[in-house]
Amino acid sequence: NAGVTQTPKFQVLKTGQSMTLQCAQDMNHEYMSWYRQDPGMGLRLIHYSVGAGITDQGEVPNGYNVSRSTTEDFPLRLLSAAPSQTSVYFCASSYSGLGNTIYFGEGSWLTVV
Amino acid sequence: DAKTTQPTSMDCAEGRAANLPCNHSTISGNEYVYWYRQIHSQGPQYIIHGLKNNETNEMASLIITEDRKSSTLILPHATLRDTAVYYCIVRALIQGAQKLVFGQGTRLTINP
Image 1 (cartoon, one colour):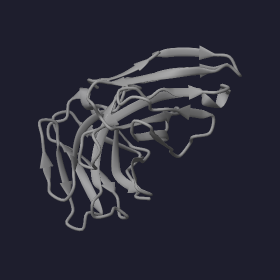
Image 2 (cartoon, one colour):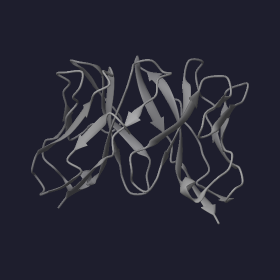
Image 3 (cartoon, chains in turn green, orange):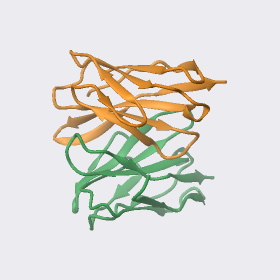
Image 4 (cartoon, one colour):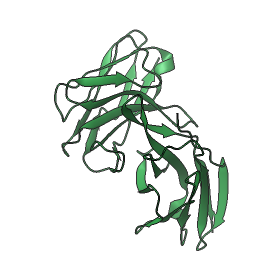
């Protein structure tokens, strides 16, 4: 998973709190995305970006905001945390084009109590 | 949306070839098939990908049927460290933007 860095790795939030999960890549990738993975489930797309200044919604965008002010960074913001957002979050990046390798970060474990 | 279907679980003996099937019958002509695996709750690890032709790298081989509606990932000599959840993914263009469409994955257990 070289090149995609997520912080923090672990976080506990109280219901209603806000926070930002950070994602950075140093490979000059245009395409970045955020996924969540609930226990025993596959990954579901939250938001994605095809380049700086361009973002769009995935399958499960409610409760999350993103921005892409630089090529390197793609933060995910939880506006008002809810227990249903307890999950593992993965950031991914790649060059544009359907045939390029997609790199994932190591994940951020979020618990909302 | 292009979707993938995989068996929920499979077992394989250590040292034997593990063959993991995937159906992607709605795949479009320019959409790639990717395979990733996830060990425990680590980040997904890239294995291999392909469009039409069979592919091989140091980790695995990917066999894609001529009609592209299904594929098989082959781990030629499975080891205990290959125990993981394996995801077959179609990288699709949906409404003009590329998305990864994950299925539920196959939990592969390598037995000694």
